Length: 267
Image 1 (cartoon, rainbow, N blue to C red):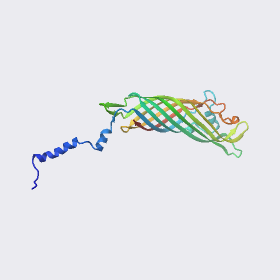
Image 2: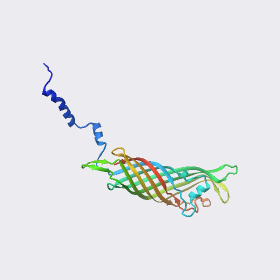
Image 3: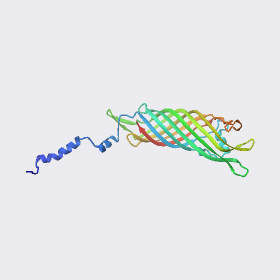
Image 4: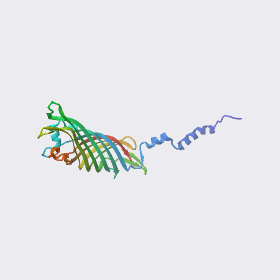
């Protein structure tokens, strides 16, 4: 015969279930909630991927006429026409709470259609050409954080700071490609010829940068940065000596500003 359980035993049952639930391992949602705000150990490295805008300075020739000066004077090209997309990847190795050693690679590019300002064909048609300009720097440097990037709790847990402003400097090499193709004017003979003129060279480079990392997870962050680079490189000589587009110009100014944002990962 069955009967309804009453008394002390019945009252103890719900409390026993509560106790067992507290002792049981947490489920997946609970684990995610607990692990959301900290890491098991201090990150040893970071990887960031950014994209943005490159704004070349396209400066003069240190007292002489630069290729940039000639282009702006002879062609319908403004400095802003040389602006273009910028992408970069950076790997940082943690040296201390405030310092990383960083290694980066970037790439900028622009393409501008133009025509001669003072010359045209006999039928009044414009003499047109395209100017392409790309740079690819490869650098190593130091990134310094103004504040501690996080704090340790016990021997294993590490809680990242949400906002981490930084600044730094780096140096290395930059490879550029300057290319023009279309129609050009020989100023001595007044002949118009069709050609592709190119200069591809490498020079030393350095840049300073500043930015901020904004944590959006225990291992991911949004990163924004502005950097200003300094570089010059020689101009290659064209394959046709009698039509050397780059003869007589100073080294090409490769300085400029890059502004970018992207995502970073704590490793």
